[in-house]
Length: 393
Picture 1 (cartoon, rainbow, N blue to C red):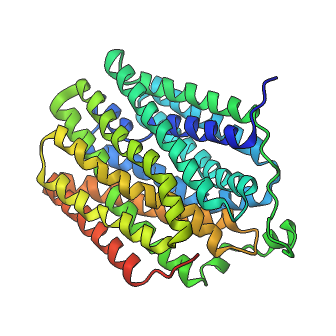
Picture 2: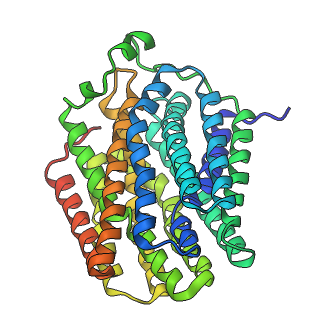
C-alpha cells in the first residue's frame, strides 16, 4: 500500500478537508433559497448548526486530548461530514437539513483540534507557527479549489451536486489519512503530568481563570459576529436577484479570500514567530470593519469580489492565531485541544449570534442595517484586541 510521509500527508488532508467543508459555507443558504426557504428559516437552521457546535465543542476537545488514536477518530469524523453532505443533496427538507448540519457541526468539532494536535506532534512547539501557517495555506488552496469546482458543477448540473462533491472530497480525505502515518501525539514538553493525570483535572473552567483566554475568547466572538453572516446574507441576496446563475459568483467570493490566505499564511506564521501574536492579530482584525462598510456601500456583486480580499487578510491572521495561541496558553500541560475547543465554542457562539441577528435584522430593517451591525462588531473586535489582549508568545 502506498504511504505518505506525516508532513505531506497532513498537507493533503488539510487540502481535502477544507475542500469538502467549503460546501457547508455560503453554498448552503444559496441552495436552500432555491427551494423557497426564507431568510428567517435559513437563519434558524444555521443557528441550529452553531448551537450544536456550542454544545459539543468542549466535549470534542476533551475527547481529542484523552485519546491516543487521533488518526482513527478524525477519519470517522470526516466520513460523518461526507454523509451529512449526501443528506443535504438528497433531502433538502427541514428535518433532514437540520440533521445534516448537526452531524457536520459535531464531526467538525473533532477534526480541527485533532489537526492541531497532529501538527504539534510533527513540528514540535518550536516549529508550530510555521506548520500552522502551512496548514492554513493548504487548507486555503483546498477551499479555493473546492469552491471553484463546486461552483462550476452547481451552475452546470444543479446546486445539489455541490454537496455530492463535498461527500466525495470527505471520502478522499479519510483515505488520505489512512495512507498517512501520523506520529503518536504525546506531550513534547519535559516533566509534564501524564495524559491521564492531566485530563482528570482538565475541567474546562480551569482555563477560564487565565485572562489571556478570556480576552481572546471575546475577540473571537466579535470576529465571528462581524464576519459569520456577512457572506451568507450577500449570497442569498445575489441568488434572489440572479437565480441559479449566481453559483459561479458565490464561488468567486469564496475563492478570492482563499487565495489570499494561501499566499499570506506562511508569512503570517513567520511574523507571529518573530514579531509576536498580537500585532499580526490586530492587523488582521482591522480588515473587519472596512469589509463590512464596503459591503454596505457597494451593490455591484463583481466589485464585492474585490472586497473579499479583505476577508482573506483577516482570515490569514485569525485562522493561524487560534491554534497557535491555544498552544501558547497551555504550554506545559496536555490541554491544548481543550483550549482550542473553548476558542471554537466562542467562535460558534459568535456565529450563532451573527446568523440569528442578521436574519432578523434583514427581515425587519433591511440588508444595509444588518451590514452596519456587523461593521460595528468588527470595530469592537479591533479595539478589544488592541487595547486589552496580552501578548502570548
